[in-house]
Length: 432
Length: 174
Image (tube, rainbow over all chains, first blue to last red; front, side):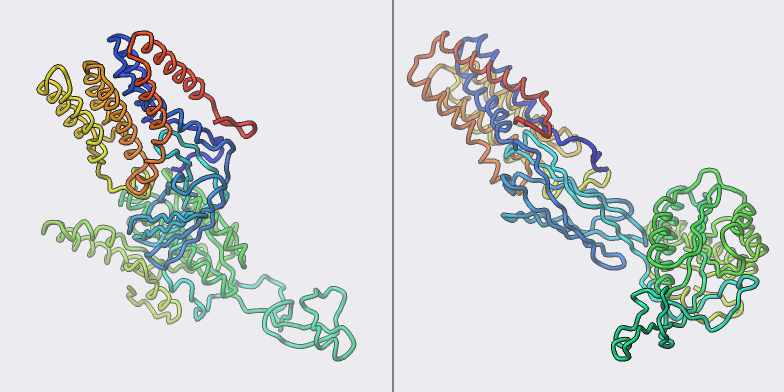
């Protein structure tokens, strides 16, 4: 991990300095002992080099800005950035150190181009599966030409957020969600409001905002006129994440969680762009909820909640999950449960959700692709074991179908089966 | 090159700088030839030091860039201590010291910045030149050795003063 940002930028002597100083003093003592100046001449450069490094150090704490951005799509993560060189410092005296977060892997060595005024860097990483990652700021260090002395230079800038989820998640405009049942007493009429599809022009009233005023029409007629808009039709979506441990083991559970988080954010982004309301429920020991909401702020809330998720060590009972949901979300809302279905508890959870009035669709990332790379080069027994696990998986999916529709998600970089299911629902089909 | 914990240091092939390790051996070999002990003991000592330095520089030992040079420094110190007193051996000893500093710099800065390392040799080279010029003017004697030792001791004391001194935001020193 990068060093604490709160550390004051101090001068740090490196191990080479200790070698030179200790060797120099030992040679000095040897020269005095044998009465010969020859070891002194050997010691001279060793003792002068650290002094020269100290004299070359910058006398003030320099600061540098960081401009960087992440590019690429699906598996590819390309990060490019520039760091302006502080005045009084040469380009070859600066070194950059980068920190790669899990689960991103390095696809090519990083490249740093040293120009006269700035350093340019290019990182080529790849994401083995959909994930949300935060890339810490790189560390910029001034070093003297011999690498004996260094000082960290604070970089002003923010950490970089990398979001990798299937591309279909961002294009869900054709999907029509169920609307939550209206509250008793609500009059459902041709509702007009401040935004949506243009409906009509009317005289302005004092409560109208400047954006509602139709200035061109007002100038033509000589009096203030305002626009009326038909309120947008929206649907509601509830995303549920199951953080309870499974028999797959902590490492695979962590990978499945990373995939589920990325999928949740992708689906939330897609439906929020379509002006639907999206809520999030995260079940570990207790329920953590982000109530239904819309807009960019809701996306930010969901992103922050997903960033904080971690596998729980003390799983709560499934009924608690379903009961707690009623406090935050109305029944009848379209519900998507992201779960690996690796144990029987998921079936119990689904039955409780159904009984509490949440029509659930299960989007289940299959753990089998995580096992496949290890098995591909393995023995015949490993391939047989994988076939048996595939049969077990199919059996579990068919069992879950009795409670709720299941989308068996095997290609993590494509949500096409899920989108196809939402747009063309069929009666008890086997999907995926 | 990716180190543990996802820390990425650009540049570097991961292989040790064997050429840098051999640099101090060149003046050392000449010192061996000029040694009053004869070429065999000095040569064996230098060869053993080179072999040990190459072993310590292996990446799997992860000893850092500076420690592998220690056997070479010890061997050069022994050769310098037993060398005869004349300007040639003094110059060779000084040159050997410069090559040790160069090797430390090459190992610390990586392959892309080895051109900049030579810039760091300016002050040590200048100081060595002044010391050699002084050696030509004054004959070697115990008093000279004592004066030079005091000068070096002063340098070490100044460095000891600099070592624990943290940099502060206002009124910083080197």
